[in-house]
Length: 450
Ligand SMILES: Cc1ncc(COP(=O)(O)O)c(C=O)c1O
Ligand code: FES
Picture 1: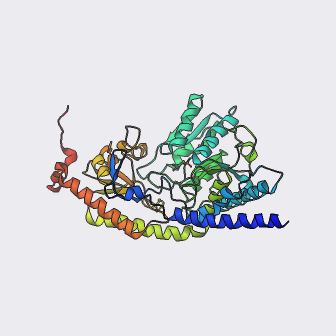
Picture 2: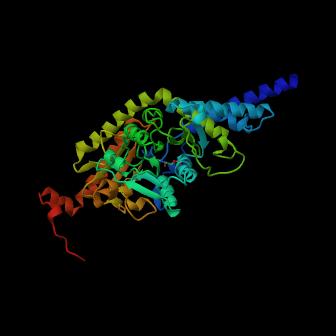
Picture 3: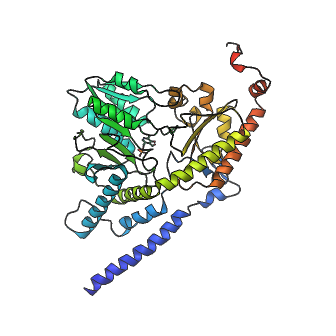
């Protein structure tokens, strides 16, 4: 008895000490090699000092409070949540169920409607291919949009190869779909309508509630990729009338490699599983549930629930500071996508009369994303910006600034300063800008053909 008590106490003390140490280390992560004044070279870029991070749509840092909640499940409570015969299993299972309730609460769902996955990519794959495969005898048609995340588009392409038909709805110059057009495209054999809530590149918020109503009217299941919406805008599965919703942990200050899929129970939506095995997660997603990651996602959802309003207010202020700061100093700045229907943490801008690649190369001190081809594996500029009808040269100079919970005013001011400096420098060298200043309409110029 005494030894058992001693062991428990020791384990507890050990864990608490380790947690403290690790969380502090994590909170101040700054690998020293980048601080070397002579710099290092990575991917052909000379780096001396860490760039400031404004790429929150790509991923977010883990909130230290989230990490704190996760650590015990690596160090002392490491049981398999599916072990039925001992405490280790039971405590992990309890933690997974708590996390399930935390995720459900943030989207107005019942915990029974949440399936844990490896991320939004997997949830999107299960939703799109899983639903269509399950109802394949009667339903052969999917409607989605041209500006979805690659994993939605690619799942749809896969279905097309199998003989399903897919309609890719166009978007207006504001990035939003036309609801009348959506109605017109619905057919008796339409088995799924998949429209993302918040776009990852341009931040526009689709009219999800209205889309949900149309889906109800035509009795077609509605799937929404809410990876960029969760914890950022109010998400409500009832109000939106969604049947399936994809969620991700690492976009909301949680860990990478975990996500969730919401699946409506009434009326019940069915899917064909993509992963077969031990039958975990109601047979929809076999495989041991990664307890620490799931606990982290749950904690991140709970924090988002408490802090979303505060975060949004702060981030909105920073977004305005960034846009006004840039516009005060330079002209020819275009916001890509609707400014009214937009998540405030996203500012996607294009800069006229500069060369895209040079702009990015000159902005190495700010970690941002770009819609230009030179930053991606494909050779085409962003398909999202092209769907909006953004001019080719403007698409090449687009920069996505992603602002988040831990972004500071100083960082925004520094980003303004560096961006303005770079754009001005490039314009000084640009004969095109020279002509514009002289009042020549460059769109009217007939360039020599070659
Ligand atoms: C809109 C959207 N959908 C899906 C994903 C993929 O999410 P995950 O990394 O969790 O698979 C992302 C993130 O890149 C996203 O922004
Ligand atoms: S800016 Fe690099 S390819 Fe267009």
